[in-house]
Amino acid sequence: MTPYVLVVEDEDALATLLQYNLEKEGYQVAVAADGEEALTQVDERLPDLVVLDWMLPKVSGIEVCRRLRASAKTRNLPVIMLTARGEESDRVRGLDTGADDYMTKPFAMGELTARLRAVLRRIRPGLAEDRILRGDILIDRVAHRVRRGEREVHLGPTEFRLLDYLMQHPGRVFSREQLLDAVWGSDVYVETRTVDVHIGRLRKALNLGPEVDPIRTVRSAGYALDFEAVV
Image (cartoon, rainbow, N blue to C red; front, side, top):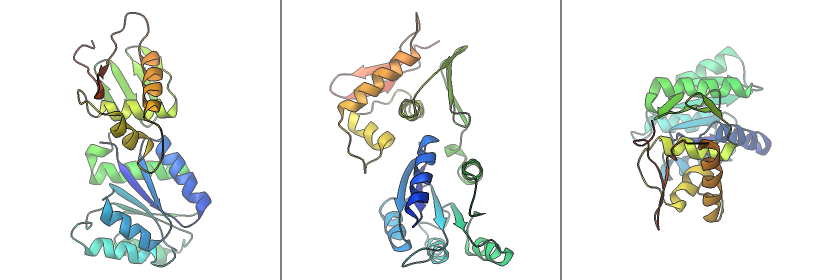
């Protein structure tokens, strides 16, 4: 399953940057602009990991983390805390409150995504698989590359996320609406026929010459990736 990450950050520019880069890495991302909104979103849909700013309006990041750890529902929810407070005492306080990792601003996006994978790998290993092989198709999330047999497959960001999602559920049929929610996000309005366009692009990139098409179109239902016929 694609990991769902909640970014809690009140600086719009940084929140947008985090969302863009994490989605590029293949995560589903939601954003909350303050601590109160973050707690509401967590209650409505439990994320797989929270990227949490310390200095937030309404409810501070430290208090958000404390409340998450106090609830049985969210006690084991992974939290990476971001803050401009770089003193050792602040770092100790953040970790003691229950954060799984702690990064000071400014930070390198590559380091953040590496730490995010490390936390998921440690706490929820099934969500942090760096490479997935199905049939003769290999997807490498770290390098953001796809191979089919000996051939490299060049995909755009949306096609990469679409393939990643389908490869996690081989054989399962997804409706266009389900794919829109999983790949584009439920808070983005995109017409369902957009799915058909990107499926077409994905097919074109995956299938050259005599290769078997792994994408199955199910009339009136949607699409599935079937690897039994792929050798």
